[in-house]
Image (cartoon, rainbow, N blue to C red; front, side):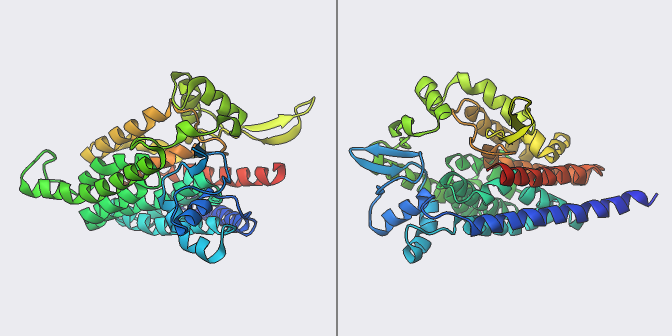
Length: 405
């Protein structure tokens, strides 16, 4: 009768040890981070000199217009990097540590969020925090924050986490709207969180569809700061590219990107139905894939750079299937669908990435809330095992990458 609790304790100890190894890997990555590798350092330097264009491009995602080069990504991570670039110059190589700091701060927000959702069940809170930090795409974008794409996602996750905290825990509408607007300035699709966030601010007995003066004022308080930041971004794009809705991708040099991405961009453009099957299979079904080479296929060659599906790499998310019937869950699921469907036809699924589908991090915070609502209503003794598997799979990934790269 006492075997199960003892095994659960052993499992937690082993999982925390694995998580500690992953944390050491992040610190090692920070120590080995190369200078002149993150284009947000270039953007920060441009801001310091009162410009929007950059002198060069450290990666492939830059637009060239009239002889000027622009970083195509939203600007906030560049502003975050600005004081560090001011102190250390373009060679600043502390982006992994910044990503780690954002991940740690996000974890503090989620500790409060989950404590409320899980009814103070400290053991479940710990398992969920381990899942978020070490068995979800958050870990990968943290350890790869030296790259412009990943640093943008680590900062966006922080601001989304802050927005959920302000909405659900504090009921601070203005701050929630401001935080999600700042997330938008890191990852544009974050703006779709607004309806979900607003519902989180409502009490369970408050009607969803009520449009009296108090409700309209509440919507205004959350929406105005977000709208102001969206407008600022549109103006930013207009000044750079001559169109409010342009992000600059149409001005990228497709010959400079990876051969696979170049072929897709020249053949189908940014979005195409041709990408749907590939992206769907990698999103949901593609397993962890180690590549071998040689005549006998026995030489370890690496890991699939297109990643592992969410369900294979983070199987604990499957417990969301048992979510209770609550309105914020239905609105959250609708938000996820709105964010997922367009990305099924995007030219990239997040490549290059290992044991992850990193674009899912844009909407996984909603799923984390859903899990927080789900776990207390059922007896899910196997949940820790699914979390442990995700953590161990990341340890195996890091070990294989250390051998093969």
